[in-house]
Length: 147
Image: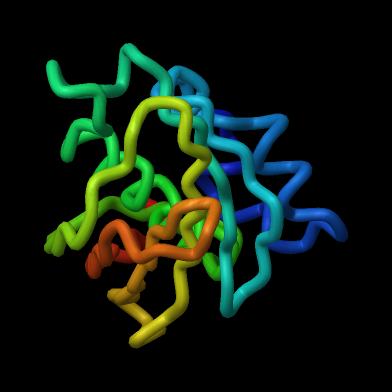
């Protein structure tokens, strides 16, 4: 991940979503995540469900869905970090509610449940293009101080 993204220096940029898109970590690029909006209290992104992200039954693999949400929660934390701080996921819980077939564009929105000095908790709601709830991921991000 680029240094300005890892260290929270992205949070002072006027167009955080564009900056996140430009500096996506390799795995987020592989998933095809596109940030639409990034503010301290909300991060929104989309991802197209491609064949290589699906199960044998043509629906999104749970791991791909969880990775999408994890990226959003991590980036939501990054937007809130002070200079020099970094983050890592401590815990993540996923509830799956509906299938999302190949070719669907999903949208995730991460909202804060807690923003503390040492941890942040984000809830990401993932919906289909028609607004159907696909899943909800709640994750805890640890805030790491510079060494």
